[in-house]
Amino acid sequence: MTWLSDFRQHLIDQDRGENTVKAYCRDLELYARWFEQANNQAFQPSMLNAPDLREYRRHLLEEEQVMATTWNRHRASLKVFAIWAALNGHLQGDPLSGVNPAFIEDPLPKALSAEEFRRLRRQLDIMVNGARTDVWGKQAIRDRAALALMLYCGLRSGEVVKLNISDLLLRDKSGEVRIRQGKGRKDATVKVNNEARSALREWIAVHPGTDSLFPGKSTERISQRQIERRVKAIGQLAGLDDMWPHRARHWMITRGLNELQIPLPVMQKIARHKRGETTMRYAIATDEQVALAVERL
Image 1 (cartoon, helix red, strand yellow):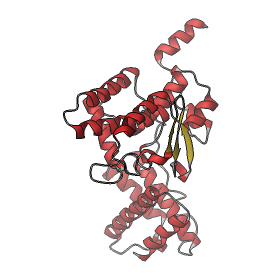
Image 2 (cartoon, rainbow, N blue to C red):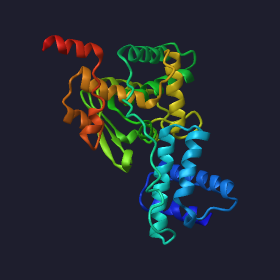
Image 3 (cartoon, helix red, strand yellow):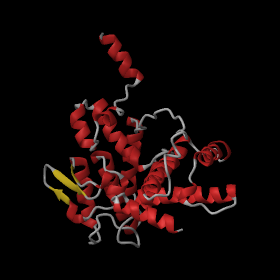
Image 4 (spheres, rainbow, N blue to C red):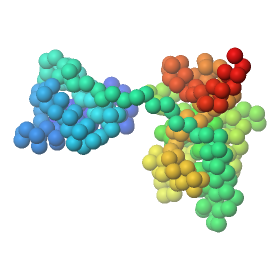
């Protein structure tokens, strides 16, 4: 499909992230496949129209029973595609103007509770101290260091896997890690606290010597998918069936705001959020906090 190749190149020229380009193109391929089955003809950009898009919305939500967020992602991909198609003379107007997003309640970030965090940290120590082989021991030390960057520094899994040894600067009482091409393709420097520095020093002491900070078993660099599987597996061993890397980041931000009472502007900078409203969503009041506050009024 020439049009898909042209659209992909357009996204790349716009400096879109690699994962974003893949997601948009995958969504367009799915729509083109559905269009061909529904209309018995190959899809072309000029054929993007509101009646078909409304039917596609109904198909996904009612027949495929996808989540509202999934349809909204598809719609966003189709919207970007429609803008590109109009700019290149394939379309006139906006065929998505009457094709609505699906309503979803704004979900609160799901952070680890204090008990869940304790169990997770305990499991990491058990894996390091109870490793039966040298290989398992080194993997456990690596996993603990990677999770420390997520738990204490708020790094995303995609940022962790890109790190090199040279991105670390560890001092006795301070430390920094350089993020290259993080979310929004932005570089950043993140402070590293004592817990994370300790875990990283232990990992560096047994590091195999590659440029990558976190190599895989048989690859130069662990993949994002691999680190997600490791975090999920560690969580299951700790009794957390829904553990994934971003919950570690949620815990860091939520704890900073609620438990440590770090001022919002400071926490926003730590979290590397563009808007304070994004950070504020993590300031979740528990029933216990509300009860104590009422008693103080």
